[in-house]
Each structure stands twice: as structure tokens, then as C-alpha cells.
Amino acid sequence: MPYYLKRILLLLGIILVSSCTTSPKQEAPVVDIVDRSSGQPGSVVKPRTSSNPMVVAGLQQNASELSRQGEPAKAASILERAIRIQPRNPRLWHDLAQVRYSQQRYQLAESLALRSNQYALRRYDIQRANWLLIANAREKQGKAEGAANARKQAQRLEGR
Image (cartoon, rainbow, N blue to C red):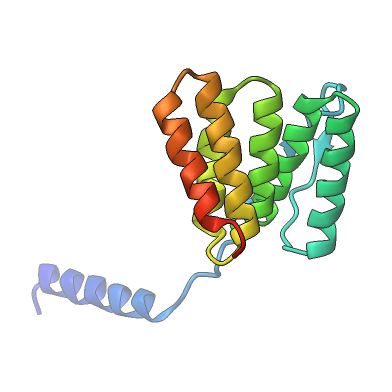
């Protein structure tokens, strides 16, 4: 048997054997999140992997308290953390929209309220609150017609 043919057969044998084995599954590395709300450089928060409703409720309550105390930046940071845990929670998006409105970031508040409505399918109370917030944000931006349309949407949801 010629030398090159032996090499080809050996190579095919190696390929055949290696295709039968599997490599161990590699998990994605865990990345620490720097907590900017603590005010201390290098403060690290381990990411949460569960969508525990109690954790989210605690974060929501903490954000609400910070917002009442006049700390909207910290409240927003905590709400963003809660959204990373439960990204489809319309209440979290609405609360963040309210915080951004209080910071006079009206276009962002409008956008966040619209996102909240995407997840609030049968939550008419949240949808109505979002449309009212959108109307106010549009008024602040000088969009009178858009504000009127948003108020009509809110009225349509009234009593549902």
C-alpha cells in the first residue's frame, strides 16, 4: 500500500474517532455587575438568575422609597436591575417611566411607557396609567395632538 494512502486512511480514522466524542458543555462565564447606585467604586453585585417575585417586589419597594426620598437616579438603577430579572413585567417598565418623567426625561418616559403597554396585554389599569403618562410626557414635549390621542386611549380603557 502506498505511503500517501496510509496517511489518508489514518487521517480518516482520526476524523471518524474524533467525531464520535463530545466535548464537555461549557457554561457562559458569570460576569459581575458594578453597582453604581452604592456610590462606592468597585462595589460589585452578583447577577441574579432567578425570577423570584419576592426579590422583584423588594426591589420595587426600595425604588419607590428612593423615589419618594428624591433619589430618582438610584430608584431608576434599582428598577433597571428588577427589569433584568423580570423583563416582561409591565409594572416595572411603568415605574421606570414614572421615574424618568420625574427626571424631566420626557421622551424616554414616553418610550418606556409604550414598552410597558407591550407587556400589559390584559392589564387595563397599567395600560391606562401608561397612556396618561404618555399624554403628560407629550404635552411637556410640545406635542399637543399626540397628547390628545394618548388621552383618548386612556379614556377608551376607563372602566375596563
